[in-house]
Image (cartoon, rainbow, N blue to C red; front, side):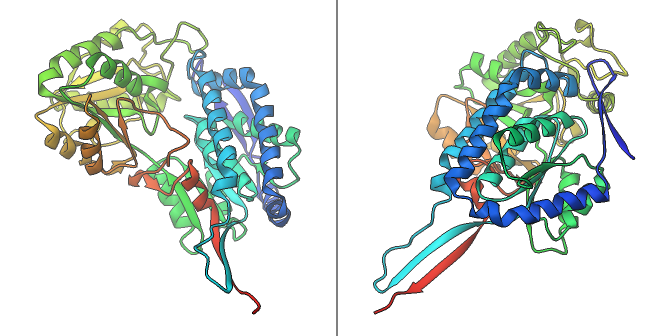
Length: 462
């Protein structure tokens, strides 16, 4: 039997290990989901919402243990891990709150002699493939609304965060969800692909790399079912000359380095108007030097290790390549005692004298490094922000909301922020363009990809 091992980035030890599901487990899960589909669809929406609300309560009852497990599984500082459970609750409760309206029948204008409406029907079993970097926040976007909409769900979580899937399953059992409505499997990549190809899977929700998204699309190529794909990002920010500079520095440094930069919507490129460029860079460097890199189980740490040494080595190599091409690194790693080559502990870095010929400004870094460029005006900033194969979020820092809206209208992105970044509001559609993905989660719009429209067209008796 194959075993998956979760190596903690905190100290390199095996934190937990689990047997991988094989053909028998996959068949049992798919058969159970298929059996449950009709009865779960027929369960009244208010009953589904009540059961899922109880499941949210059950999961949050163990929030302290869940937060500690997060730190050990993926390295986020213990002082920050509880925030993920708060975000999980915000999104889950919001999506349940709006479900009656979002899933309600759509009725066109009255037509004499007819009764007409559009109903949102569940699709059937939904397969959710979730990543490790925000394991509750990424999965809740799909799991809770898919279930609320009447679809059974099978969750496959990252090998790095298997305990998250198990906490979901325990909470669903405690709430009393019927058999087969929610299940989880620990799977290899090959068996994950086989699941996607199975005719009983009606929709796939995938969060991960561009390469992973392409693999999902290939696996679905012979089937007429959809997939929601939340993929990579190289998210930019633009600081205009009229911005509140202190606020911009504080927000963008956090947006670049929170979670050790391991966020699809983290800030990876900053463009600063020439009149305030020097002051912005100076303040950003000063703030970055205050970070405490170290053991994430220590309450004083606010920058933990990256998820694994290979990930940190990738970032080190990308940074070194940029420096060799003419970039200047403004942070001395020697100021961070925990920074060690050959380990996942990596100091934050700010690069200037960068340009778009460098991978650090064009390819996703997914680590605690940010490049800063000077720009002459809004037009140059817009051109630079759009010069990317990604388009997840973009941020504009300014005191002029009209200018932010005008600039935002021209940015090729899924979300435009003004004076903030790296945050998902559950009332707004979460989506990307270009190679950042396809589809939408959260908000009322998020229910659309998890249902199909079915029209009822009745001619009434005379």
